[in-house]
Amino acid sequence: EAGVTQSPTHLIKTRGQQVTLRCSPISGHTSVYWYQQALGLGLQFLLWYDEGEERNRGNFPPRFSGRQFPNYSSELNVNALELEDSALYLCASSWDRPPRETQYFGPGTRLLVL
Amino acid sequence: DQQVKQNSPSLSVQEGRISILNCDYTNSMFDYFLWYKKYPAEGPTFLISISSIKDKNEDGRFTVFLNKSAKHLSLHIVPSQPGDSAVYFCAAWGGATNKLIFGTGTLLAVQP
Image (cartoon, rainbow over all chains, first blue to last red):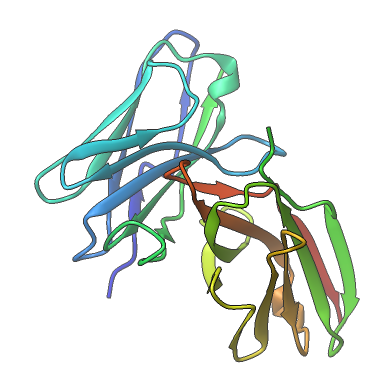
């Protein structure tokens, strides 16, 4: 069974640009979560999508947004990039919301903003 | 406001011995706890979880203990192996947070 996949693996952007990150969940999973892990910090919750709807978002500005498609894949968009957006962006999926189901993570997309 | 804390940034253990990783939380409404392992440049890998209605859960070499009165959980790895060397994150779900909250991680180094 294929795990969570993310693309691209790495990318470099400059301040003010926009970026789109992609995530494909494990087959059968309907919930997708996005996290940011900045250097030296833990995982910070960004967004949770389930059945195409945003269920919750973390303490991030509105320039962080996303969506979930009918096939349950998801995109994370970040507008007006800032230097502090440089981080590892992780996507996770689950069949349903915890605590009934555990979240399984993809390998992440490493974003560098110059 | 760090609701889930891992106060030890690093831990070094000899191969074959027990590794004990600790985690404290502040929100008494958390009802589900998980441990993840993370290697550099990879996503976290789920290890083991525990519901708040239990105080212990075991899976092979991994055991998680939950002390609700102390708002403390720990992960025991016995015996420790060099391949266990990684960053370990505890995480908690529940209450009104409606999200998984992670600790800052503990870097475990298992020495051969």
